[in-house]
Image (cartoon, rainbow, N blue to C red; front, side):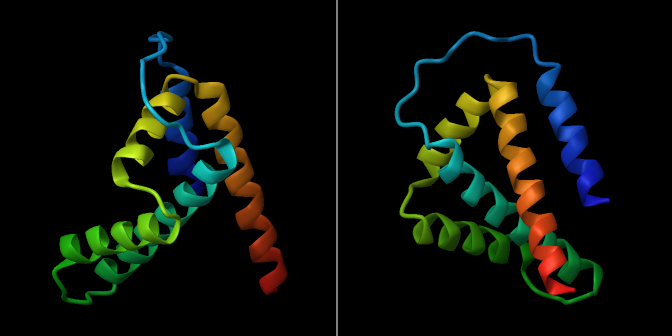
Length: 114
């Protein structure tokens, strides 16, 4: 199901017709961006599972806190991540490559767990 969501996101992004480069500040490297994006997606997945398992908490606060800790762990500010996201959304082939690397990494980790 999660892979289907990622593929859908990639299809939406690749259909984007706005190919103008925006003048932005710092852009994370593909590797840096992939590591952060993977951590964010895993945090979202865990959050979704906890919500579906009826764990009653202030869920919006928890996910925001997790995002903050991920950004802190990678020594970046949220605005740098957002600028990078804007850049990669304008470069769908690069973003697709990043998601491919994330999926490969997750598959490898799943294989090692077996």
